[in-house]
Image (cartoon, rainbow over all chains, first blue to last red; front, top):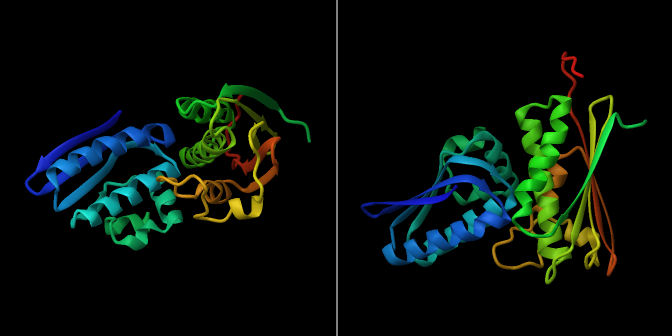
Length: 107
Length: 147
């Protein structure tokens, strides 16, 4: 449960796992931000393939990292989003930011 | 209509209880044999309501969150989440998507998620007394007989 960070060239990949809620999002945010602050990656990928549950706290997590990457002059991608999470993302309008893999919109 | 089963639960407003609250309600509702999607909807809505109690109602304190769930013969589930916290001054405004007083990284989507993932949502609140959120969802009955 939590976040595993992998550096791949100019990319930073955050492999999220378990539940994302108000309780867990805080620690995920801190871990990602401190690594991104050090690496200053061109691309931050948030990988949702091992996320079992997400409420709107996850939307805050994505939005916040989007802003962070903007301030670092980089980009954010949100990848491997399961169906049950895609619904929350669509409701938030986050799909308008252009950070999602195309197929999320059809899930 | 009388419920065929009901449960009540009270928990402290600690954020570590968010996962417990949604898992407990989901485990109870599982008796109606919901689909994975229906269960995910209920878990998400419960998580939002409980988080509101923790972040807003009992902002600077630890209080008690009261949760009840009722199951009905026709597959209806009623979940009620209540607190005795600060209350909401303007419920209509609080329910607007993207409205939040919390700052930080709160998206302001809690009520929008509850509204969208459940069939019915009712919020009543009194400043200084607390807030009550009642949500209903119909679990589609499938051809399964269980105890």
